[in-house]
Length: 180
Image (cartoon, rainbow, N blue to C red; front, side):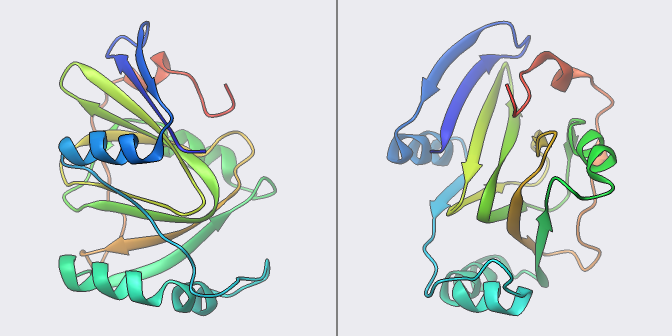
């Protein structure tokens, strides 16, 4: 179940928890973030290829590509047995911005996005079927958990893909991790 938690920037006070998917979407959309739910056009097997995944969501992928002009789309998968999981987690746990939108669709598994807007931090648990678009230049970070399990479609308007500009702030250390 997708969950939105709203904190003060100190991370010491949980201001609100929203568990209704439609209300989460409405709240995020009002902040300029896009939150959608997609359904596969056919069942995907556990050993499916990138081509299989993109084909299962072909209409939604094409719709987003036309709307944003994405230059590349790929599928990334990370599991608990990935040899670099700790390094990758540490990297993405640092607050950063992008000159591009960060758009992720969760084909499987889950991950926790933190979006830092003014004096609040929005913690969004994304799960299978959720699409999140964090617009360019919005401070955020991502927690994939100590034992990651997710498969995501990633969208990029930049040919060089994921390029993060880290703020150097340690704000992420003040908030609960995915496993908490």
